[in-house]
Length: 286
Image (cartoon, rainbow, N blue to C red; front, side, top):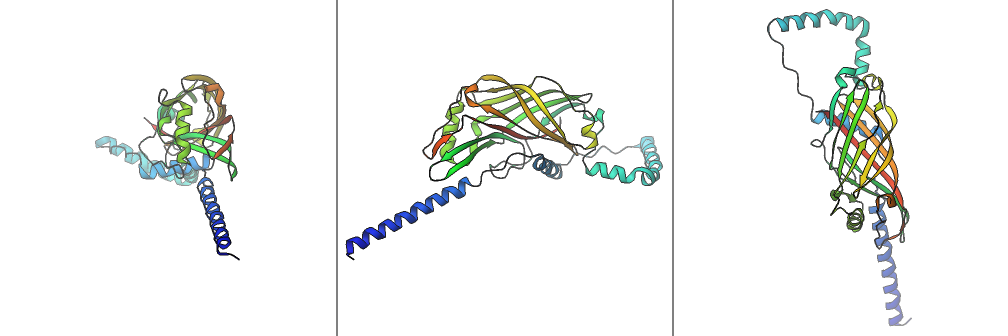
């Protein structure tokens, strides 16, 4: 075999190895797309949130109030132990720590506790999922998320009367930095940096929160993206975990409804014209 031919074969083999390594590297990066939101994840984060930032203890009673409280405590201890201690303990462990009246009021997204990364968020976040076809890779689900979420919900008489959520789209990050700029351009974040959701119909939550039971229902509202508002119905799950309301939700949206063109980057051969908007929110009493 001539020296030239051996050289050509060697170069060809090296190119194949480099190409395979590059493809494998891309696959490893893209193969780590986060799972869909789940109530189990939200409950775990809610428990961790309370460990990291527990509620402040109540002011100690003084004088006659202290005596009264002491008597009440001693008087109820035997009864609790004999009749309902185990039940109360079980309820507390299930997150049933508030009565219906205590739930009433304003709850706000906790924006101070926890940290956000695409792979391992420990606080509230929102984002999207879109199915794509990638060059040399095949089918893949692109995920973009941000931890910059704020908002409130109002509860009164076992009903959610108001929900207002705002998401900073300028901080959306995906699994590939090459996609980030295209996403920002497609969403027009220079002119419309935020997306919002506003509940349009009150939600009946019954006695589920104080019993510690999860809630599953559809939340109708107005979703605004790129300055365009459309009615949506978001499938949500929620549960009271101690002093935190954990909520997850998702809804399928068609990009054209919000004047969003599917972003194109070299590695993406094609992408669906619709996707899933999803969120995980942790609310605390304001």
